[in-house]
Length: 193
Image 1: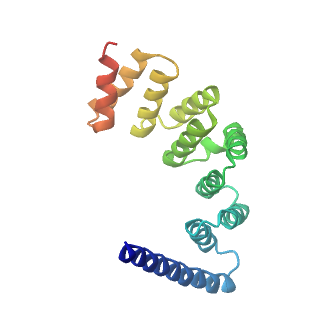
Image 2 (image 1 turned 180 degrees about the vertical axis):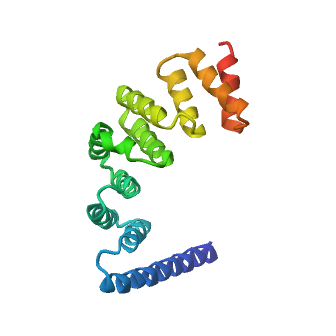
């Protein structure tokens, strides 16, 4: 048992040594350019890895302040806020984003919007807003396979619209977008209780 404790302690020491090296590299970069957003984001990540959640929130907030229209940076901030237990704050911020018309219209990438929907649906439990936002994302990205799958899920689970969900999943299958998740949802729609 003592050998195991020794090995674990050695691994922890190595981990903290490597993180400290990376933090020092980031500090050097920031001394040259204090507005280097990727470096600030890395500091948020490293702070989180060493369980300094307040510092990770600080760095993520700073990155978001420097680039306020970046949904990726906002998602990172939400992640650190959730780690710190600030669920209500995250829900309010996401709901405010949902109300912003520019969020969907200005977005070129549906994956970040789907991550936002997933966070909101999982932590905030506001199905009405989730449904509304998914429908808007589907309107903007009607041919995106992952958006279609999310829209099918919402139709099945929240709206009880099995027929529409079947049509959406059938559309995915016809496009050869077949994976385990699509097939299990397809089969689930035809199972009788």
